Amino acid sequence: MKVAVGRSDPSSSSARRRCDGRLRGLDMTAGIVWPDGKRFAFTVFDDTDHATVDQVSSVYSFLSDCGMRTTKSVWPLRGEAAPRIGGSTCEDKEYLRWLLDLEGQGFEIALHNVAPSTSLREDVIRGLDRFKELFGHDPACFANHAGCDENIYWGADRFSGLNRTLYRSYLRLRKRRIAVTGRGHVEGDPHFWGDLCKARIKYVRNFVFRGINTLEKCRFMPYIDPQRPLVNYWFASSDGRDVDAFNDCISEGAQDLLEEQGGLCIMYTHFALGFKEDGQVKPRFRELMNRLSRKNGWFAPVHQVLDHMLSAKGVHILTPKERTRLERQWMADRVLHQYHWWWCVN
Ligand SMILES: [Zn+2]
Image (cartoon, rainbow, N blue to C red):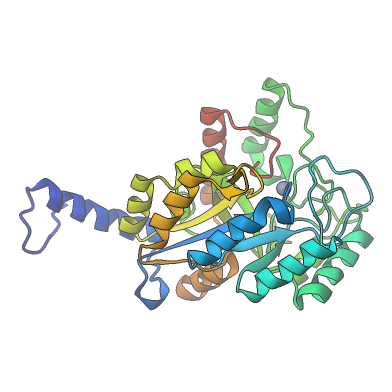
């Protein structure tokens, strides 16, 4: 196909790069125009595993200084059982004060299950009500917390048909029991809360992929999956599960590509995992984020970015073909890169 590149010499390599960039940009952004003339969007969903004020407050001060407003997840309740992966909850007064201050600054507070351990339906109701009482609204965004029985469409239930069988086989091959479970969507189960998810939460995170441009992997998000009707809209994320993965994902080259493609990064991370050393935010993370923040990007919380996409491109209903491709793409990422299966990036 012949492509006009204006006055540039189409045979020059710089012209070809610009031309390729525009073409890729059209594909990768799914036609999204970002607000206020911004060229791309970047945001973070921070999974609250291991988080305490001491661990993560300096990271948030740094983000704030960079002009970024992102999304921090919380557990409103302490929970009944000892968690496999814990951290501070909203029952910790100092932590809660800090969270409220963070929200006042424009950061989004989201939900990561109502507690770090398994909750029954009545606990989920109590946790959702407590969230609303503390923050004045229901959570707009939600991500399952690994190992909890009330997780919604989690474990093998994230997959369909043959992909579900493949997923189970892969876990067996890696000698993992099917410990990643979830019955939050199973009506009649004591852990069922899917009706509340539908009524009170707008966006739920599903697959996490490698690569800075989340739209490149899932261009139709936020989307409706008719096979999983208790979730209103699903979104995908990019894998920045700890400081090393985060830094790899936002390398200088990746940042430039995101800008060139006019793309979107919804980074999924745990800010309690290695972003601070000797009381300071790690230098390489600081350097990369400072560089990114100087670009003409939109740095808003996850729900704002997803709301913008919904109003810009309308509702997308996932087709069976798209579902199969999305699931296979995620599996390929995991098999090729031998990812750790236990974190919430599962
Ligand atoms: Zn988690």
